[in-house]
Length: 434
Ligand SMILES: O=P(O)(O)OC[C@H]1O[C@H](OP(=O)(O)OP(=O)(O)O)[C@H](O)[C@@H]1O
Image (cartoon, rainbow, N blue to C red; front, side, top):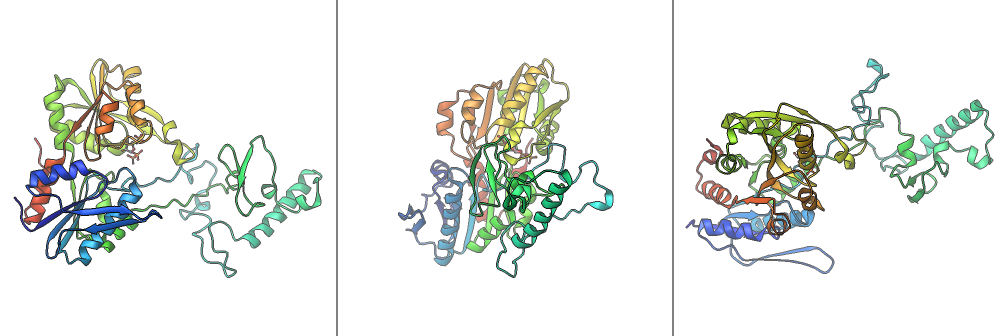
């Protein structure tokens, strides 16, 4: 039994909290989590945490935003109730998958043919919006100035092409500020009705007339999430298989990033017959390091799927082209990845491995089985023979709906990490695997 310690569970994963507490030999701390009718989170800690070492367990799953706010409020409540130290235990770290900048179909935004070397910039264009003197400091071009310039441009163009404008009022506006059908149905518009029209195909007038080389400003929330946790009062973070291990650098408090690798490796050794003749496959370049580490440790061959991600929108990721590098013909393929969200990556990879690569069987070993939306149905219908995930997020429902799914328990790993952090012992022993 560990003393002077309080483990509090958030709403995201009660079973894991229970399992961790059983292994630590302590009851979970009493906490009431509820919502006001407006939807705001309410946290009440019933046990005294004064002078205690507190661990708040909350995984980045389910209602991620609500759960994250709940975690922040709980940490802050412990701090203001005089806890000695508060550690956020986030088996799946929320927001760890940083958004990527969308690519154009023809390649990266600034790598287009025709752009002269001296003619480009790595700054986003137009620059980051700054407050305007007239108060119009919102994202997008300064209305008056730009509209005037564009009106002139449109007039010049209309004159040059010899077309007769249908109405003088329309002609005085640039073509992209005119409401017109271009084969797409107009489905809505913003407040500034005359300036933005959204078409059924998801594009807007702004999209259709975006400057070549324009790079969208995509929020990357890493530092903000780290700051929110430390601001709330977190003194330490324990997590597992961060999608991007560099995320640790956003914090100025200790971050222990446990590895799911020992569990996955043990599964391969004990459950996959003749595993040494199988091939470890990374479904994208991002996970290659993780997968090669397992292949090297077990003396197995390695293959890589190159995910050519050239969709125009982030939401188009499933359309990325996949290419297999390596020989898996007539062999068992073991896909290794850190997370499966929509499961598009693993199901498409499995199809490629069987159809093109000639794999006899496909396993997918994933640390975080998020399985959003119809991910489970997609796996059931896919060429994957078996999916193995950890319970870093709840898997009860998923197991019921997916006979191919096997779950590995991470509660021992987290309870041991908590025990060691509490006693000030090294946790590097948890990173060892043979
Ligand atoms: O189940 P899915 O919805 O297909 O998502 C899973 C994929 O997403 C992540 O990679 P990401 O696409 O972010 O690329 P990266 O590894 O290069 O960051 C992750 O490493 C998986 O490969």
